[in-house]
Image 1 (spheres, helix red, strand yellow):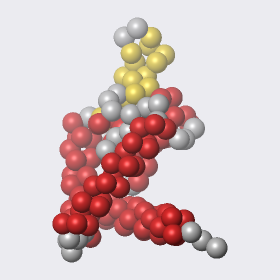
Image 2 (tube, one colour):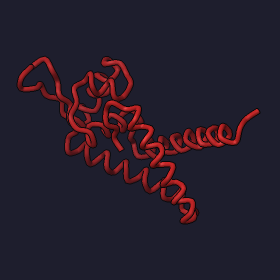
Image 3 (tube, rainbow, N blue to C red):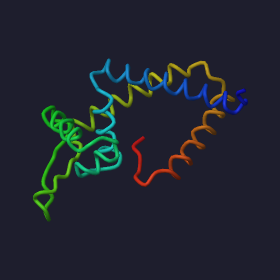
Image 4 (cartoon, helix red, strand yellow):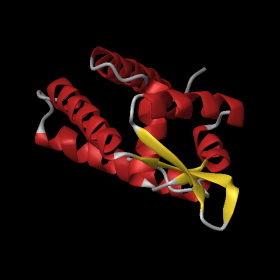
Length: 149
């Protein structure tokens, strides 16, 4: 038998998945893949990273991240340069073009969310604010690395 708490959590899970799929569709319609947007978001909002650190933050193996970074370099979205103190160590940073592309994609997602929530009452927006605060606290407790917004 499911408790009211478990039922709400299950419904929240379902809604979160649907929202993520919807945002992925917005990104893809704008020519921006999820993995690319996610990695670029880290580089824009957290800052330049080594390949290994970026792979760890994104939860992928370094060879996977290496392919993604090479593709983003080819598109002019990131710059990868050796560090001054160690030429073997590469530092990956978002280029100006990458920053503009990410901010445009972010704006499209925020507009889609605004549209999705256009009928929300002030009380529902307040309830969402409480859920966001709860999730933020939970993520901060579990996270060693900063997350990109």
